[in-house]
Image (cartoon, rainbow, N blue to C red; front, side):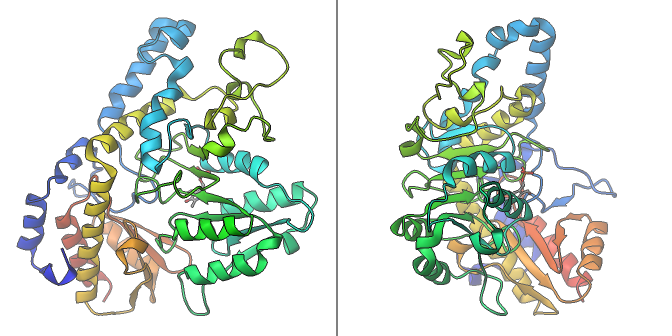
Length: 424
Ligand SMILES: Cc1ncc(COP(=O)(O)O)c(C=O)c1O
């Protein structure tokens, strides 16, 4: 459906929901109530996704098995804990376009990034630098800077920052390509987001990965805002590694276990240096209690500790829903939801609010970022009082996400009406 086919009246929004086969998935989630008891207009999936109702039973299952079995639950639980992480092998791979074995759910995002940097940041001779975007999420900035220092290098000379053009918010693919082309011989690793956390921009991963490979640089991704949001083909794009969290669009709960992708060509290379721990050892010999480390093949070989079963159970609930709905179908719905949101915002005229997320559907996910010229925090709190959950990131960006699993067209219609009233 093209933009001009959207009408601005309420009846039209109701009709869109009524004819939408994916709208039924909303009932699988707990929608928090607002102060007036009505469900919140929850546009904060970019921060913390909502709870799948099925998570409760899956967590209870593990609690009950723990009570019933104690240590015997490692092998005797309904979902044996010893191999629990293997339950994500297929569904985890489907999420990011990987082969089974290229993905493991473990730790949290930044921890996984450290593990990947330990392996894939190998400064040598003139190739010493890491390229990230200047506006990277601070945790990524801290992580790469700490690795540069760990290797006895100086971030002043070994950290290269890519910036949008003067006065712009969005990174241009051709600018990034040019930077990689010009400075590629110095760059050991390019680390980029799949979706930029502030602007909602979807980066052209395939093109940028190819540019990095051409210059002999490793290419890694922070997929915090991309996983469960856009369609990814990490294996085919030959990405070296990727890391993500599961508490945003994957709806796996606060502090949920993160994820990690290691391309097959590295996963099978047992000689790669890594920060090792017993859970990365081949399970066949794990309990032989020998000092030599024999990494398991695939991404599993980067595990360090035994997995947090209670925080993995909600992810199981969530991925079952993704498998049922289908990521491609969700992505198509997400494009329609954001197109509708953009149409309604555009219909209100500017009034000091600028959409900074790219208009091209291929370059945006389900987050629309609005630069608010006057009092962004006041606007956010007026929206909160009216029952809208969204957030502001410094200094002036309002982030609004319409998650295709649980948001509705009618919520977008209501949001636009509230925005028109409060952003005057
Ligand atoms: C883009 C991005 N990277 C990294 C992180 C840090 O994640 P974690 O606390 O799971 O390490 C976040 C958290 O919101 C994020 O949005």
